[in-house]
Image: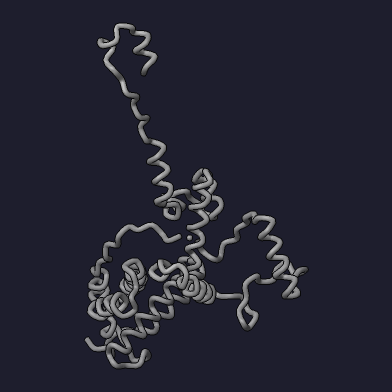
Length: 279
């Protein structure tokens, strides 16, 4: 079957985002953006892979073989980790399940895509985090509040209560990508004096995990950390509160057995009380 006989790929992409994810499933805007990024990357790769314009792509161009090539491209060319690879595949799985339920002519193609497995990722603790469209209220130290007020005064915004705190060169609020770039610039600068940072994947999310670790080290219970991070369930918080090496060391020291005193034989010392005294 040729692309001419197939349903329009563009039509399903539009209805997937314009109706299914937003109206029917009512997903959060950031979740929809994650789906968008995955599909956008895949379509751009597929067009380049087949030497076509994106507008010329059809379902015969975006089958299982193309998806496997795309996943390999993510890991080898874009240097994405296995988790990112799996996240992109999960978005594609969702899209193809949506198409399969509505268009029998591409059911076989969608079934082949559904059979592409996720890769097993090594369980590693997050480096030393939540969705950006939730409102969270957290206390700040007096010294932090003083710095924020000073910063707002310098911008002439001290009396404006709804002004964005972090803005770019154009004075618009920083996007998540803008914040990530700012963090990465600081990491590159800091790596000059702390070389180990160069090998770490540090992003804005890293600060959430660092806060959770510091709260745990200070002796706070897991429900307190959950409330601080704004999670609904404490199960979600568990991912961000992996016990680090310092906490493991302290736990080991707490279980260190008390050394046994040197004990002589009471049979060599007829005075039992003296023997007990020498223990």
